[in-house]
Image 1 (tube, rainbow over the protein chains, first blue to last red):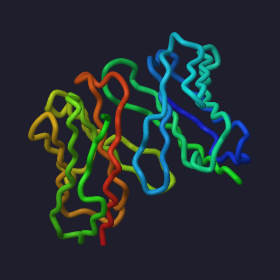
Image 2: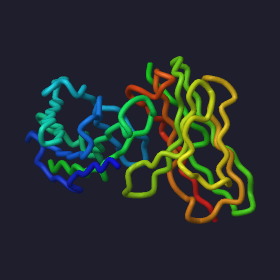
Image 3: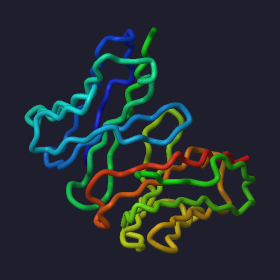
Image 4: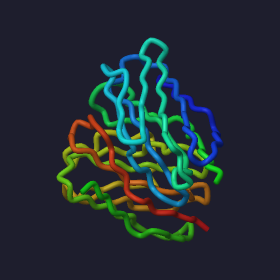
Amino acid sequence: GEDVEQSLFLSVREGDSSVINCTYTDSSSTYLYWYKQEPGAGLQLLTYIFSNMDMKQDQRLTVLLNKKDKHLSLRIADTQTGDSAIYFCAVPYPPGNTGKLIFGQGTTLQVKP
Amino acid sequence: DTEVTQTPKHLVMGMTNKKSLKCEQHMGHRAMYWYKQKAKKPPELMFVYSYEKLSINESVPSRFSPECPNSSLLNLHLHALQPEDSALYLCASSQSGTGEGEQYFGPGTRLTVT
């Protein structure tokens, strides 16, 4: 089955860039997603990238996809304290139209003032 | 508008109680989902409804009973739960009834079983 892995913790200073990494095992995934979860809240869809793209930029967020290495990353420019949260990457599995998403373990981003 | 609403926000129930969680979306989405999330863990899929019909049951115990009365509403009926069922229950929806595309999540119901 699909295995999605993320590092568990990242700490940055306010104003720095944050890079959160994710690796997956199934190369036939179509869309790949990034979600943000603040304490006590549900998941907020941040952005997504289609598998035929290498990069997608949306304001402070940049998603990079390396299909050869099955590596996905989320870069947050000018990180703010409000960006402190858990970030999950999610991959559809099995590929196709089932609605199943496999989530990584989540990366806790700590932003220090 | 990408809002999914869930009620109640918090629920405390005993092991002999029967209660229900409710989820609503008015985005015209044709697939709806229930997830369970334990503390410090990612969400785990429980059920998928596609065009108001149950399409995926991830081997969830029968003490959890989903219901989709119409395309906007999803319920999760709870009966004879165990303390280990305490978790955040998240509802989500997606536009395509086939499950393709991004899923939008509600704020969740935090359930405590005593």
